[in-house]
Amino acid sequence: MYMTGYIVSSWHDKEIETDGDRFRITIPDAKLETLLGKQAVQEQTHLGVAKFLPQRPWSTKSILKINTPWHVMAPRGVKFLMTAIPYTDYFDFESCTGILDPALSTEINVQGYWNNLKPGKHMIRAGTPLAQLIPLTERTLEFMVRDATEHDQKWLKKRSYLNYIGFVFNRAKLRDAYERFIRWK
Image (tube, rainbow, N blue to C red; front, side, top):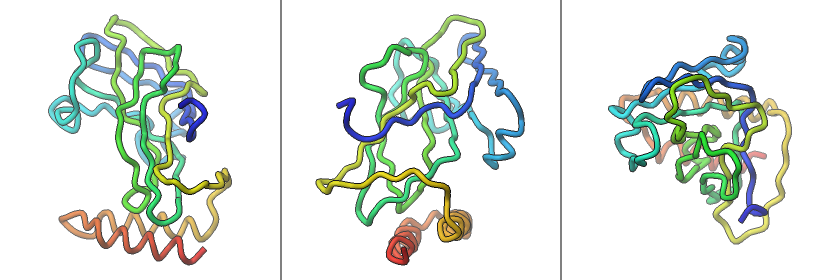
């Protein structure tokens, strides 16, 4: 299992201060959020998204969403299983399991349980493995890490527009636009 897929690591240090079920999140510099264009770490309260996830008795009720600057663009029909690190020595944070469908969102953001209930300050260091992405396909894929091209940037702007164009998220329209995007390459 540990040799399958790709590991998503923390791209910067973050300090998580807990007091019961509440978080105070500190990052090294606000410029990280300027680069990212949104909060680097968000709390998903038990009244929002977290209420749809099973609660662990050893975790806080709210979950953390760690936003990254990374995107995955895959061939048509390829989705990814995002899961917790299977063999870890870091137990404070545990990724939620889910499916990443690049046709709907190319963003690699990790939502997870905070398992350290001791009040105080705790660190997630840059480079800490947070989640594992496993391609869901029988095909052999070539993995490439590169800077976004001008073509990629156009897609990201278009995707952002399609996400917010209407009152209802149109999955079919987004999927169709993504499939046209990957054919243009």
